[in-house]
Length: 140
Ligand code: SF4
Ligand code: SF4
Image (cartoon, rainbow, N blue to C red; front, side, top):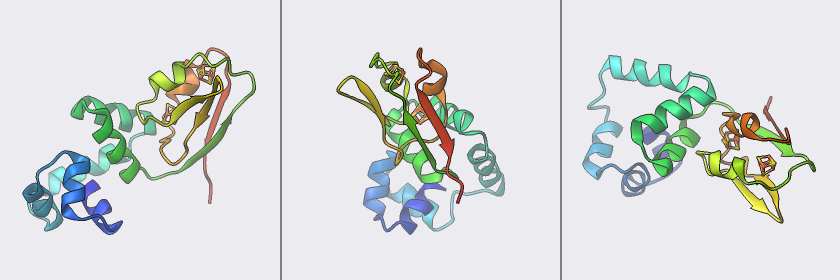
């Protein structure tokens, strides 16, 4: 699913292979609909339709690679998220260390979230000792 979506975004087979850690011939096979059984497509759709946290943790457990995980999640996730970090943030950095999407940085001892990469897993919200993070789904 990720290869097809990245191709639709205009990426070349070489770029897709590099981003997903695959060889080009495998990417080509997927783009041509080969290597895809009906069962594997159904399983992929089930995984993508999990809640954001389960989708993220399942994919990371499977791939054991943060960079590939965040690209697949960002490419295949169905929703977008928005929110803010409140002034009560003490800059402890727990959210930065916890975010598998690498969507959080510390700036002047205050967390900042890049919502281009946030997948709405809410792990940072659960971890924050000062309840400073608010994240919600964007409703169009
Ligand atoms: S975990 Fe909470 S208090 Fe710590 S840096 Fe992140 S937002 Fe700030
Ligand atoms: S909800 Fe928090 S931990 Fe999850 S991706 Fe967004 S910023 Fe990262």
